[in-house]
Amino acid sequence: MTRALIIVDEQNDYFKTKNGKFELVGSEEAMERTKLVLQDFRNKKQLVCHVQHVFPKGGPFFEDGSVGCEIHEGVKPIEGEEIFVKTAINSFIGTGLEAHLKKHNITELVITGMMSHMCIDSATRGAKDLGWSDITVLEDCCATRDLTFNGNTTPAKLVHTAYMAALQFAFAKVITSTEYLSK
Image (cartoon, rainbow, N blue to C red; front, side, top):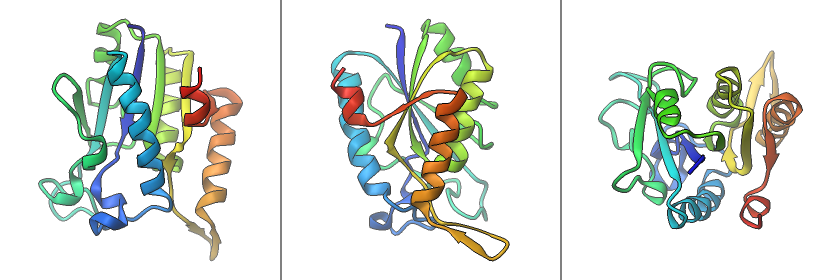
């Protein structure tokens, strides 16, 4: 086994159906596609790692101990799948994820999750900086939100497109879950 799936921050606060505090555009659809990829990894007995972002009590969302902080039931870990709790944007900082992947001799990473412009971007770049060269981001298994800067709002679709294009340029292969599962 040299391949691992990393599911980043698929937590209830990102989902309208879970009354999330920080709803993302397209989170439900992305999670449904992630479920298919997750099942494929489980069927092939490949390594699956879940990353969970936790803010302390009083945080803006993902508040420690809250329902919103829980991993969405659609992609909940099963026995043998590790959860790496993070307090930083980068999934590798202070989590033990890097050591876990190296312990299992993982050479290929497949990354899914939320938010495209923050934690997916950071995890992908972090993995590349740590020496992984075979990284795939499944862009339709990721979601983000509209962003506003200097009074200008950029729709989530364009935010997502810009970040996927940047990752594809130098950090990862960026494809759809359908393309990935058809290999």
